[in-house]
Image: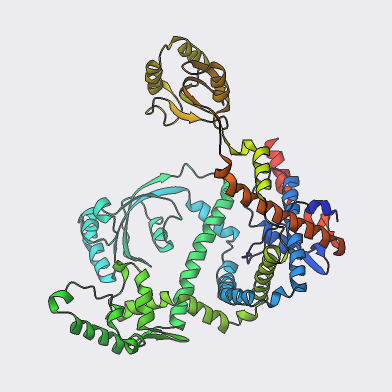
Length: 574
């Protein structure tokens, strides 16, 4: 391998890898060997999938993949060096790994029960696309119980005003304002039960009560219009796929948590709740107690034994009063359950202990022995080892001396110079001849401001009379350069800026200003420290490459790239 590729390369050390495989079309080939370690295409794809970058050609994608692979090689060199120094046995590293085990278990559990099931079929995507043909204007009334919903449906059927009933009965917080009107909706904008009922109706129809996780809906379709924004299926396919995956993942998660609530039921100790409510009556007079929320309790009013009373239990754990009252402080007061509302308490305790319950479930399923889990845990450990190796074990050079700082300052004055700026008012126009005419007619700044307020086409600048403030060359290069030639108090232009033309009045100028050495000394010191540390790391990498064999398979890298998508792009552009 050409070691020059790794010159000046800083490593990428992601501490969380994606569980799912990355993009590309190859099998799990070996793309590089670093000593005895093989970097596989799956690992390269996992790194690459974390880069939210698009490419104009297959060559551009290849170059980015090669850059990432080079950084992976450097990381592997550091990991190998860390093993040789027994960094894998450092106590702080062991504690960091132990502290993150549950997080990786959650990832594998989520991948098993959610991610692996969300890929939509062709038929599902076609069905979704077909439902996008129209958009509906919909109103609804939502209530919490089926009897009230049935009563309201009967009243609507008997001719009562739907909007008035929504205003009076709907628990939708916006109902007092919009009387149930949800506006125009596309398929995919609401929960499935709601949209299935709504899109099966025609304008003027009202549904029987429809149950969703939010309650019971009575739905009225007010209007139906064609969806002008629906394109061809091939154009919308990726968007539809992503929307379906989001919807399916949410639905699967709800189903999964509902099943967990049944498998790990939370039992509230009613005696503890009764004790708390009774203690409240002892602590406060009736007139004070009447104004206190029944959802909270002052921890300081409990002694040590009382704090250890068990409020709730579930298969695998329990919650004491101290833990509950401490953690419930982070829950908004409006949604805290009353201490004598046992069902609501059980729901909140489940949410508070959800991660522990998920961990118990993952262990019960044996996921702590899962190959993917063990791989992620190992990678987390090794990436931290590389980080320790890079930052702590490779000897850092001595800090820069005063003379080094002064020399850097004097050799890089541009870096510490505030650039010149011009204060300008501008009129931006699409018509070059009109701009030229205005530039010759305006005689004063006040007249220029007035015309700018009437005519400038730069967004948001009419109200400011075309004032661009103090501009730098990097912001408006054409205006800046022209202003620099004519000086203060003059009108310049028109100059072309994109497909429009700018005339401007130069109001003022600030000259370049060099910052004092003492003001930037700390900044220079920090920069030189980083540069010297990076140089030390690079020297270590160069020495390591002399004793470690590194081989890269260029064909295997190309095999990870879907070249056909770039061929199709070129055909479309042609």
